[in-house]
Length: 144
Image (cartoon, rainbow, N blue to C red; front, side, top):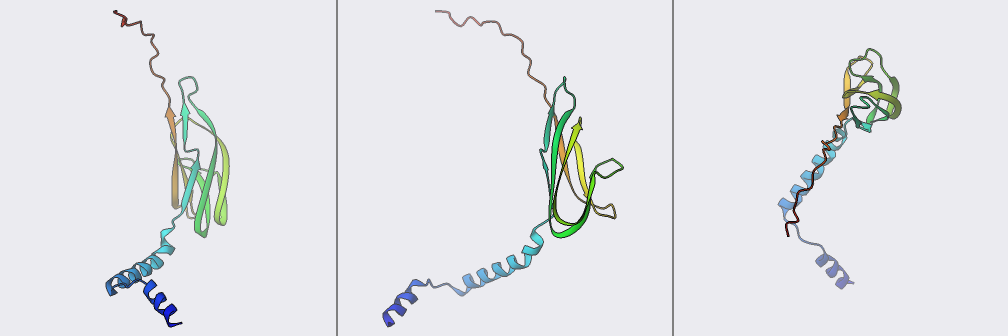
């Protein structure tokens, strides 16, 4: 039996006091910071829309997702518009889908009941301009 204890004791690696102190300190800091590490998260899907000269506005089904650590009452706003799209009461997370037609970049905001902006997200509109498609004439490379 003493042989088993000796093997067990040899299996454990010896650590210096400074290494143990650093490990303990790192663990304490991570435990103290972890409640504050998670912030409010707003996700817009898709976050980019493409337009062309023929179709100057894009239509999309936008999915707005929000997640938080604490329940909040929030409203979804399109920046510079006087009316909220929708509101949610005491929610940790929510999803909202809306059909939109956009011609320019659009900022979406989550606001609390006092109209303070909690977080925001941008849907970008990319203007697609095809390359010049002029026809190239044959370059006489067959000299031989």
